[in-house]
Amino acid sequence: MRIDVVTIFPEYLEPLNVSLVGKARARGQLDVRLHELREHTTDVHRTVDDSPYGGGPGMVMKPEPWAAALDQVVASAGPGDGAVPTLVVPTPSGRLFTQELAQELAGRPWLAFAPARYEGIDRRVIEEAAERMPVVEVSIGDYVLAGGEVAVLVIVEAVARLLPGVLGNAESHRDDSFAPGRMADLLEGPVYTKPADWRGRGVPEVLVSGNHGKIARWRRDQAFARTLANRPDLVERWDRDGMDKHDLAALGALGVWWDEEAGRFLHTPVDVEQ
Ligand code: JEK
Image (tube, protein in one colour):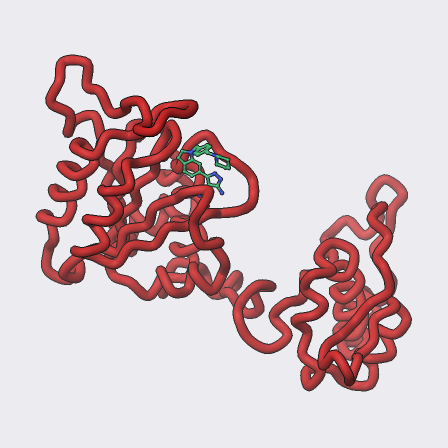
């Protein structure tokens, strides 16, 4: 996969040289190219922002440098890149970035990212780009960042680990909690490793019992309890057909039941304390 990033802060993207993404680049599985937006300005001050039409706080990124930078990226298409990139624009008002969207993006041969600063990019840049290439405006969550670079890091890492050969076999994405599909809306339970006794704390007996049926049952119970405590919103997405009688008993003990009328699982109010 090829990834281009246009930014005024290329140094903010240094983490792309490290760990999973860095290794994927070194192996030639990922071709990441950074572009400095200011190199596409024409004035002595290398200006990329101006005041917003209509008034209001902050500054808006000028269209000309973005258009010049994106034109150059598009013009650099090589064999196998795909005719045009999919343009990903991080913004607080974008479509929520989920594992499903990560999978969708992982299927594209070429992504271009346009992380902004200030209050964002002049709208006409996105409108014009959308006439030439697929454009996805994405938000990584319901909080406000100071710019789009961190969102690029998040999206690139989530996408890169889905590319063929990037993850080792051992850590292959077998059951990512948020992967779309049946019973995927379940958080992972706790994990433990050696030593068996650490600062007076042991490991749950069941995990050293060697009884694989009991271990699977315990892990599922832990997953149910954690999902209910931390993400009660996921409970209503649980699939009745994915539950056996042991599951239903475990859920009953947590105050979760199948409501035939509603056609979904309901639960008693969740205690917000940990
Ligand atoms: C890209 C600039 C900063 C800050 C205006 C927006 C409601 C008005 C822009 N999940 C995410 N959160 N934030 C971003 C993100 C933030 C960005 C840029 C992405 C470029 N900023 C900024 C405030 C505002 N407010 C919230 C009130 C606009 C993001 C992603 N992805």
